Image (tube, rainbow, N blue to C red; front, side, top):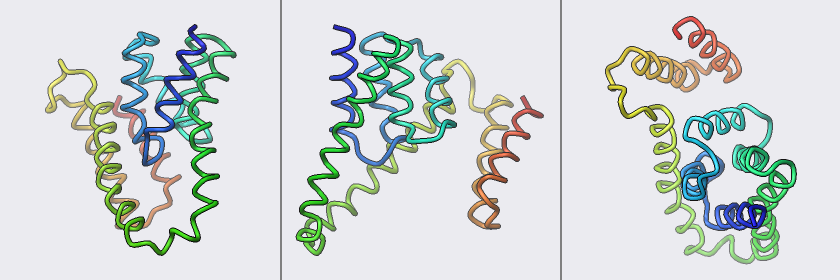
Length: 178
């Protein structure tokens, strides 16, 4: 029964999600909390590890949640559930893409999805950045985290510093500050 729950939950997420892995995190969190599979802290740790691991964060998170919940079989069921919808959708879109690509309604709908995806990503970032509701926003670790984020964003967008250098610099700043 647990394997079926994992498969169906992640199948739902796979069919109903748009915008990539970080936009999917709130939906994954909802399912995890609904079924009581993980604690909030463990969920954040799993998402962090999945984000640092090679590959898509959504499928990595699904596999790690499935593994923690039901072992290797759970990881396979959760990963299959989240990957199957994408596979089917890509096959269908590829079959009709050339016919529908020039359609104004199709183009407009994709442009309309951008703000929604951006909002979901911002929500996930805020939710993970300020997950402890007892911690005030003006507390020094929160301010230091915001400062690192702003400096990283500025380094990449304004000064065109390679993202790997920014990630390493941010990691070093985190080690020193925390």
